[in-house]
Image: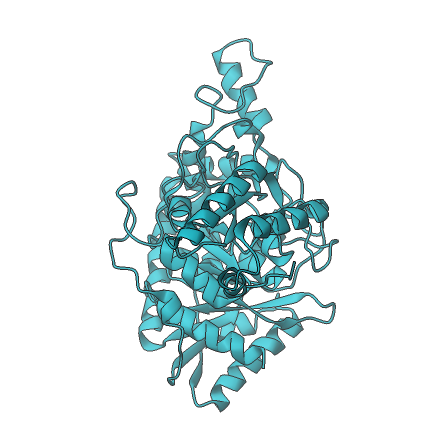
Length: 476
């Protein structure tokens, strides 16, 4: 069978009767088996995926198939899918079977997408390298000695290695955009509240978003268009109407673009990433767009603010995993107190424990005002500064990551160095605005470089159109 690299190719093959959904699923299942050593999948839904494919084939033959008929999707192991395990790549949710399906996943199913399996990730979405999973690390298909990024590393590699058409990840502080950059993909973090979080196992509730990995912008836009929108199960989701992103990709206007001086001049920035970012900005200038350097004096406060607030929310959210209700329970307890302590000590990994302890500390009575309250105030300043900038400019462009994919173990013993990998992605997360990473060339080792574009809240349509324009220009 031919190598499918876009949904458009799949649709044409289906329309021309060159293939059917069952053959497409078998094609991906064979790829998954061949590339099992990459460790992208936690579980492959062979039986249910083939059954779905047969059902969709019947719908195609009768002329009433949905818009995603033929699209094969992998979902990050923090999204619930009824009748299948969801364990957030953590021992503490060992054996837990979802009792319902996440709204975002259900909307794709309703349009006849086929879910092929759950994808490996950093435990509870906490990490930047996919080294924190109970299922082991995921390998970057571009160089198997290097990380794929995190926490949605499995989701990124599944698309990178052609194990599914698109995949779903989650982005709390860069967990879609950073792996997308490391694997040469398009990855979006939508506006906070654009997509329902119902059925997403929470890490930090005021930051968590569900995003999409794809090889191109049109596939990404189509999936986001179908997932987004109001949901009676989620009181925090926006009720704003969802534009037809996939039909609004034409771009033919002059725009105003800002880039942050502090990001380009960061000592942490790899020279080739700086060079490729500046090349894009120069090209935009030459094409008649307004490109201005702006100062972002709050950049050094973004990471501390993010980690104070997210660890506090994680401490609260993860208190529900105690061995009483579901998931793992220690066999070594001798009373109630030891059951709680041992279950959590044995069930959570080191990074999750670290963040729970940090969060518990900043929420403690003695330090609540000094850390948590102050961080909330700084978050407001960062949000206002970013929104003010995006009211003056159409887009902000910056590198997605300070470096290309690093080697396994390189930052494992230095949490601060690992956290610095999120340096350029957390601004959009703290501000709640949409941001998207697109491929922007390769470094001297042949590793992908990412370019990040930010737009104002609920401007995903404009973001996709501009990103599509840039990707097409990059490919010329």
